[in-house]
Length: 350
Ligand code: V47
Image (cartoon, rainbow, N blue to C red):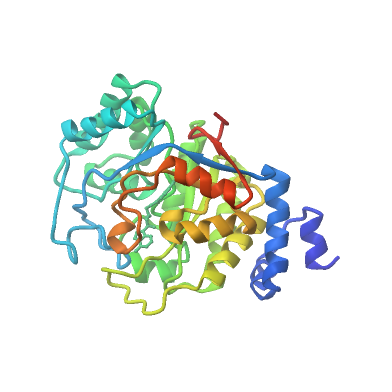
């Protein structure tokens, strides 16, 4: 059986086969990924109505790719009060927003309670609102900073109202690349361990991959393989999100942004490799809306959401600071030949 037949008949691909997909004819690769997408989701493209909140940019860690952290290139430090965060949430709820996605830098000055109490305050005021919060990188930071185990932090998150975990902080799992781009942050094994523990509590999460910087194609496949292996055990990842590296205002100094062709290939390869992760998100914030629409034909079935305010990727050059209008978003999906379907945070259709 050749690789094409193997994929068409639903067999799992090996590391070497996955790597060779990058050399396949571009449209053939797209066709194979699209076939898997169609089997799983037909022509539906999911989105949700969400609000990103990034409550502080003060960070104890130093990641070369990051333009958001206030410690170096960005001198404008901020830390929101809980009252300010609650104002944003109140406004979001009044406009029928279903999810808040709360991710912060690793601020050593706030205390553990500042990180956790806000979830309880949100849940108490708005029990129906889905709280997606704290990346595994933040969990690791809080555990180190406050002398608590991962188990203790994860239990505290649940007690305080966190519903699911976002997929940030995964970056690239290869240890050599990771050492170069974000030395000192949560390790790959720790990132996976934290998500495994979260899944063992019956909870769901997402998983990202930051690509288009110094990593090789083999590093990307290795990243996907490690996700596939854990997913076989826990089945806790809802969605894979390849994040296209944004080049501005950071210390990686990548001169040439990744090509659209390579982004689409990576989307398609991930749809084929991650046969046990149900959803593939084309995160328009980092890919641009236009490319995210094309990615729908290369395996992607989720375009994230309206976002409203975004600080991490827009600091590095993404045109996402003010989100997109819902009517525009759904019209774009329809006009590209797909069916926009609103979902909740756990991928139930609304
Ligand atoms: O982990 C930082 C990335 C991530 C840059 O789970 C950059 O639904 C590109 O994880 N260029 C945070 N990316 C965002 C994130 C996320 C986003 C949307 C949805 C979900 C989800 C998760 O942003 C970080 C890091 O990998 N990032 N700097 C940059 N220059």
